Image (tube, rainbow, N blue to C red; front, top):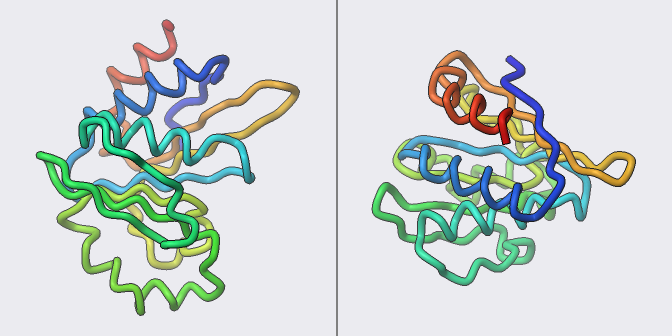
Length: 156
């Protein structure tokens, strides 16, 4: 279900959206990021993690596949599926074991979609005609959880 689409006309807007989603997050949440290379997926993830994990250094996990960050709510896993050639590699990594008790942010989620829960929040970031947009897709639970957040973003 389409939950909303917003212009990202500045880095501070991206930061604000990521911070607010981080505040709403809880154990068991998955944020699946989609978009072309260089569109801002890692930037979004860095802001999200810095809000929850209190100013830690957040490198791109492209070569390590994933990093774990400690957070008072739940551990946060930041995964980059870019290098995964076969979605079965997800099983070998063992990450599906962490989905329920952790907060997951996955870049290039389309590469491992088979293993992602239906309850994920899909976040598309696109770059068109010199501006970026961010779109949210999720189930009714996400709609209810994000209702006030999305209304606030429409105003800003």
